Length: 231
Image (cartoon, rainbow, N blue to C red; front, side, top):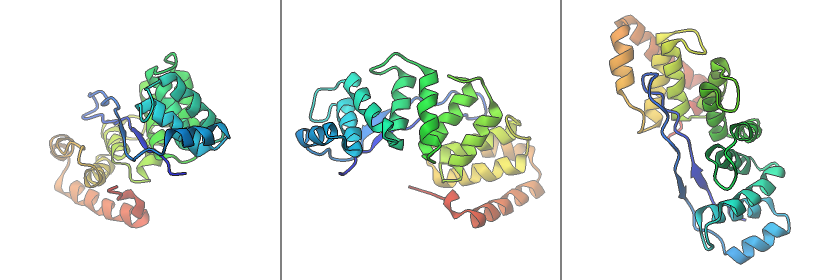
């Protein structure tokens, strides 16, 4: 069954290390399948249909919006190991939509999806560790999960790593590495503020360090072409 893609991405922009992340928004990215057909398949145990039905209730697509029913169907798909459903379930627990807000449960479901290498869940999990939401704050663990999703070409995670390397939070401070991650992030994402690299990093770096960082970018991309992902 064709999946309905639900975009609920937490943009973990840390700016100069002081800005709060931008809050998520949801938007439908595909034409939904017929509601009756989807519900029948969902009730028969089809995980894709269960996920789609959750999206339809969440968005109010072909049916009255109902967050509780959305959670119900996300849960069924998530229990079958569906990574995107697990991620969306994490989102509703984090925001308290259709369920009581519960950061620990949000982390639980983000973790399950992240363990399946779902990049958006890895980003969210990194953010939860960075802020200490539902888990004890652990900047090293945050950097670990940002690294995993950054390796898949996620611009926000790449920017977060750049900020962490610049500030020496969760990782050893390294302006060259920070500059490299910021350069890659800027290539991947239009929402990455270039002023962090130009106004914060470059003023602290020598021309030789900047040249070293530019060389490092080439080495990193050569080693892992997936770092550049403009989708």
